[in-house]
Image (cartoon, rainbow, N blue to C red; front, side, top):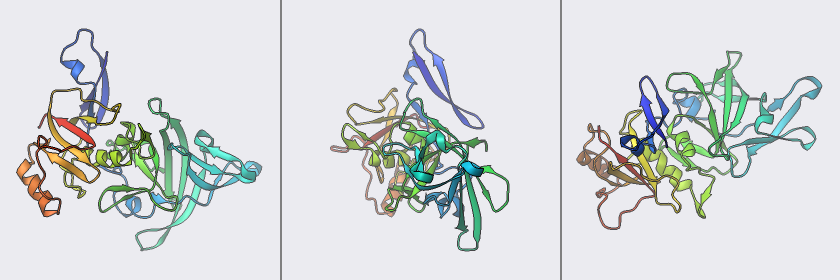
Length: 316
């Protein structure tokens, strides 16, 4: 049996171990590291969460050079996936890897201060081996005539991929919203917005006939320990949690005997025992949620309390 553990130092990574005789290691295969970032580390201010790479409509694009150069319009996602597609000259459809090298160009409003010449370049597109409806897109950008940089970086500041998703992230509430006009947003790998997709809670998908959009929202709250649904995190990067759901069949099932921390809905925790970080007491979090108008959070053994997702943790 292959066991996956989360190892954290300067950053976090999943490390696989082979179990040959049973024991403690076999109970750790479903652990997931959590964290406090929703949209990545590079763009947490106006540029990422404002008008640039969140809820953007891609325009002014081209691919190729010289006589082979083609304009690209009609940007969208292939239905049921995170694979980008666009229409070129004479109705030619470009999608996925065929878009590598495409460049996009527009004038962006830099927080109402000035117009900035923004360019994007699709560097690479890779289909996930685990979930074939997920595509990892490496995207570089530059402002005016500056140097090219990756839109997404990991916890070490190294370039990483984005998962392009429909809609946008509400920067005040940290909620995902589907959008109404073909908007697209970038979820950077390693952040809550992308982790929940890779764990299986893709907002565009259905499971057993049930839309996973609310499971996705619940997951992003859970990863960040946003108990009150107010965009306030109560965790630290790399804290392990055991994640499971009530779907049939389940996407993730519990794999430890850790205590139940909380159950989760799209607007935060629906019940809470001991928060995963001992620096936060249950009483303090309950008071915080009451002050935010969420009412009293019951404990998770209260009758009739059920969330979409459940987190188990060894408080630390």
